Length: 135
Image 1 (cartoon, rainbow, N blue to C red):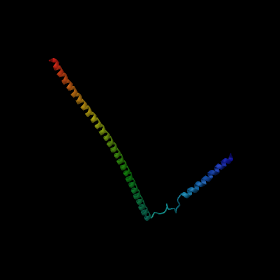
Image 2: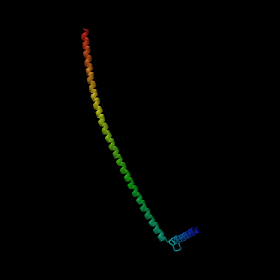
Image 3: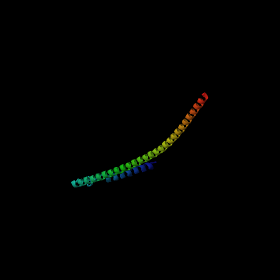
Image 4: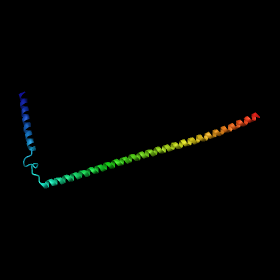
């Protein structure tokens, strides 16, 4: 059991040394570029680079927005065309149905006229027969 404790203490010691080594490599030194004095030329250059990068990013965003708006416009046009085609198809079907109903109404009207004419003829015949019987 004591061996396990010794091994755990040794592992913690080694990990501590590793941490100190990595941390010392990460901290800046006095000769590091982070602590160097800033010269005006490099800050102007950095500003120009930052400006170019911002302009490039803005152009990229504009191009992306333009392409997305084109895609949305084409999608809307396609959907509108599909709706128009569907409406035209429905209008054609309704026109055919209206013509069929109109034909049926004309046929029914003609039958009605024939029936009325037949009834008037029968009424006239009945009146004439009634007149003959009355004489």
